Amino acid sequence: MANTLNTINVDGATYDAAAYAATKASETKTNDLDKNAFLKLLITQLENQDPLDPQDNSEFVAEMAQFSSLEQMTNMNDSLGKINTIVSNMDTSLLVGQLSAMIGKGVEWDEMVQTTDEKGEPVIVTEGLSGVITGVSVTDGTTKVIVESEGKNYYVDISSITRVHELEEEAEPETTLADSVTPLAENDPLATEMITAEA
Image 1: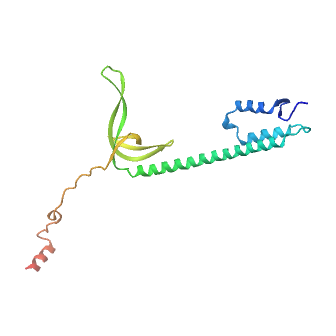
Image 2 (image 1 turned 180 degrees about the horizontal axis):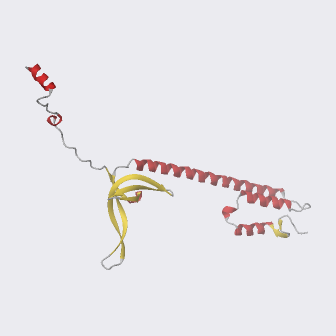
Image 3 (image 1 turned 45 degrees about the horizontal axis):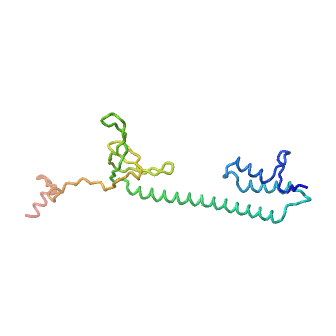
């Protein structure tokens, strides 16, 4: 009598369980074959075993061990994904905080510009630009600084920044004590009282 222990019945057709699992695995991406699919396959195998020749206990224990290992790896993968998201968010927050401290400072960066050479052929050259940092932008996980230069706003990648510096403040004209004192008018009653008191 043939051993029907490792067979599976699908839509009225009987397949070898290992061959059927291999076929389904090749048809499905590995990421889609999760622990629930493994458990369904194991239950189907148990439901369709020969009651006169049941599955060997050692094989059943081995399959349960595989299921346990798969579940642990899946849970570990999910946990690592969450940790990666948290670390990425922390990195972005720290970077935004550092870049926000540069708002109002002068910046110089290199911009790739397409132009034409003397033969009229297109070439890409690096042009140095400068401006004032006015903000920070985070779009699709990419952090850039917003720079105002000659009335235009640029979204500058931080890897292209070559220099950040304090803006030079315009020197205020020096004032003397004589400039801050207002002379009294001759017909001011206060001035008359002060002159009378001195006399």
